[in-house]
Length: 581
Ligand code: F3S
Image (cartoon, rainbow, N blue to C red; front, side, top):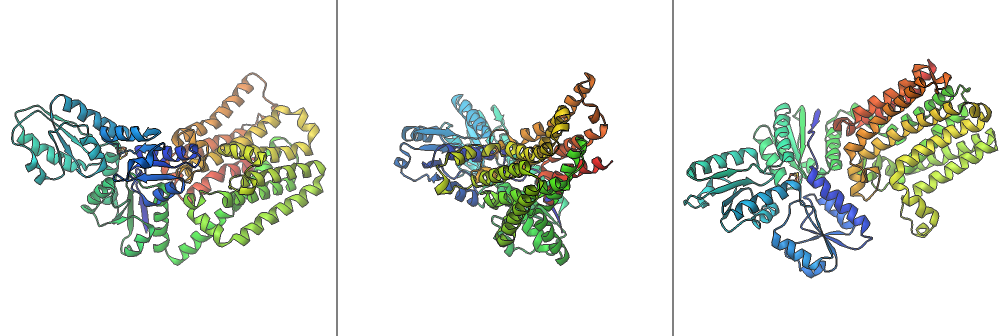
């Protein structure tokens, strides 16, 4: 069975901004309750997580004294001016997260109301966005959702503004506008298509998806209007099903279809889309494929592909430094990062959202993976002990630091007040830097300790090898953070994506290899470049990692299951392979 997931499926910019802001307010608010005026998004799983982070929903009929002295969020749908005044009178802070498209719609309605125009809104009168917009209109305001509703309009002609709910179906808007045009032909009729860009893109895409596939699954909350519209569009072309929870798939039989298109409403989180897509894939794949996929999942959970890559990277570094490759350093590097990566999986509170399969494998085979961590650490210590005191101390230091850093992700009560843990916890958002630095420290540090004299004589080459390792690791780590940024934020985890927007961060990171190549070229021009690095081959892994980074800026590749995990580690393999040449 072939699966196609829509490029525009999932959070739109307005919802993304609202959800991320709500979670960051929750972090800043130090456990004090925050309220959202109405459900922040139409997604029960996200609402549950918000509640666990002390972000509660203020229902429209709740007593406003509930928010006295508290913070309140106005969600993307916006509110009436009257409601906003009431919230301001009670709450300590009012965070207005009204989507910019809704804000624009409110301003248009306000402007034309002041000019005395009749206001016609095409949309659902009960939808909170429309309720809010009506609050900006004068009394001569009508909300229409079907041709029959046109009868509600007064026959007396008057200058009229026609707008749409931001998530309205384009086709409905167009057909109602043409009827109103006939009805009010003698007056000034201002038509503003206020359907937002995200809705337009999604609606166009669902048409294409429905045409290309045998059946369409629409993922999203049952009371989300944009999800309902997507369903209506898809079902007018091909058989379509609503899926709100993974369990809904039990009621659907897709076995007679060869291809399934997946589209999701603007308030459906990425992790839910992935979870549902994976469940469909698993349920309808052959027995052989199921076993193969499980083996691949297990290999990825055990970080074996990455560990072999780390071994090859240590080989590449020895070659760059023109030192004989010590297999023991390769083994230490591979086992250390294998142990730390698995440990990171157990301490990562967002894993159950960002990578459900890995989470399930870790839960099911806990004893196996914990034994793997302890055995790896034990072997590392034995090997390093045999290599000499300096390397042994370096490994002890790195291992203790790695374990404590990982533990600082967990909110362990007894360790909460330890200054060391506090310092490490404050570094969590900089996980990508810390991990990349740790790899560089361990790998290049071990080689330095082994070949101190020759390294001191080739400082620039050593610096290049350190920059090389740091760069490959940093790019790898940042793309992992970008991939899981949505679920990290929902689970309250802070990473670099909390400070820089994921798409911008992906582009910035892709530029790093180009930057390193430029620095190398400038040094070459000014004859500062070490002669042993002049072989153009050293540029290949850097250029390759740049190409991979650019590929990963594509959302489809980034969210793919196996392709991402294979691509992200290939620069380590390329580095190892070119070193053989
Ligand atoms: Fe805004 Fe459109 Fe999303 S109005 S909240 S971008 S669906």
